Image (tube, rainbow, N blue to C red; front, side):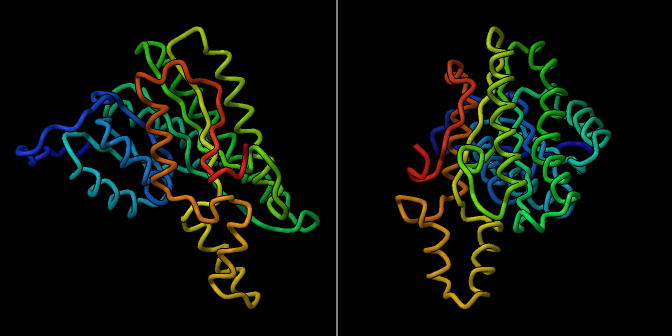
Length: 274
């Protein structure tokens, strides 16, 4: 798919720093929630973007929005993260559109909830396919190109569930621990070269997943305020994290000046994990 471009018309204002100008960033799940905030942050830093997700309609809407933010190119790729062939095709097409990928943000994920005894094997498998296997395959697909470029940033959006346990989401917790482990192993393997690998671990964030959790708690007879209090009781700040706060951490990790930071799992969680 051909990229769209837009030029900043606000010439009367001082130009914003664009430290990622010319870099090509691929963001999975870049059409909504944390992924959309990350895409906007990287666009503001000057990166050209490929947004990848299953929903073509929301991808197009996000592309139109980002194309208005400045002199960047934005491409979209529809893919199924459960399908290795779909991942390969999307990466190839993204590189054809905008050149080699210098930044990969593995953001897309799923978080099914069920008591452990009632968890179905198919749900367990799908959680690992999307949360872990896709991150592995995408990273493997772009590392060679990053080495040829002489720079690269891989950022995995994990969760505080990759640093501690939570009840009723065993597959999610196990998969996010695996993502953190993959991050650390790959960071060490690539440490002598120009590529850094890090994880950002948000706590409960003001996204559709959190709002669904709030609605589920309300169905048990709680008010929205009570539901939010239950959801945020592990956060010392007593609030949900905002997607833009997660995006700011990802953007910083992608900067050229962050080259000494690798193998880290950075909690963006109001002090929930220390």
